[in-house]
Image (cartoon, rainbow, N blue to C red; front, side, top):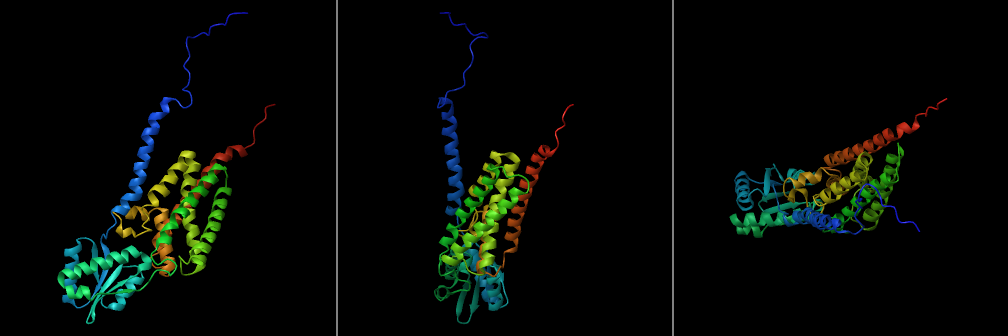
Length: 344
């Protein structure tokens, strides 16, 4: 029996065995950091929800208007942004057109507060609280006599808006999953965008059947709701799909984190973008979940009023992601289509 031949070149370094201690430190560091970031993104906006320059219409005699606006500024600081309207009809139109969050009408029968709770029950509640407190400081009798008129109430199936807010996260996750699957399955050329658009259209149809037809969370035209839901899902899907086609799996993860960890908590779906700390409300409206929530509210409850900007935001994200998806995949597959020269 021959003796074993020693290996040349000295001792060789072996890779760390699975489960070795080298992976302990990254796990112990990255997991708490990720948890802290997610807690900040989801809990901080809820803990800091408050009126911030809410546009509020004011109607009445000049002297009364001056008194009320001064009381609003003294009691709420920068909580309200008073805007004077000539009469009640003009103020009511501004509320239903989503130009202001509410309006105070100072009439002979006592003050009246016009709200639209379908645009956000939290906004209507905070408006009533803030107006009563402001009026109470100047005239307690006026605060006690304040009447509240809801011009656009929430749907009977979801009067508090809880189901509306709860439905946003599943739609966001569905969109991210659809974009990730397109990249994972390697759909090339025009097939990727076509399949993604078709899948999101089906999701919009199913979501409209559930939220509009069955649960009564959404009102207005059924097809408008289905199209808005489909566009929301498509915008959420296009971002990770486009980045995934460009960067691979890290791009999918980056797109998913952007949509879920930033877009969803700062969407204002549970309250209103005007109640979020600056500049996170504006950031949320620039991402698909926030723009989608605003578009759905406009289409479902306000006949499309105030829906132009969120519609353009969603179209922009969808177009950019789909274009990136199709262009990058075509460029990668183009060399495979060239004929391979055969040597003689």
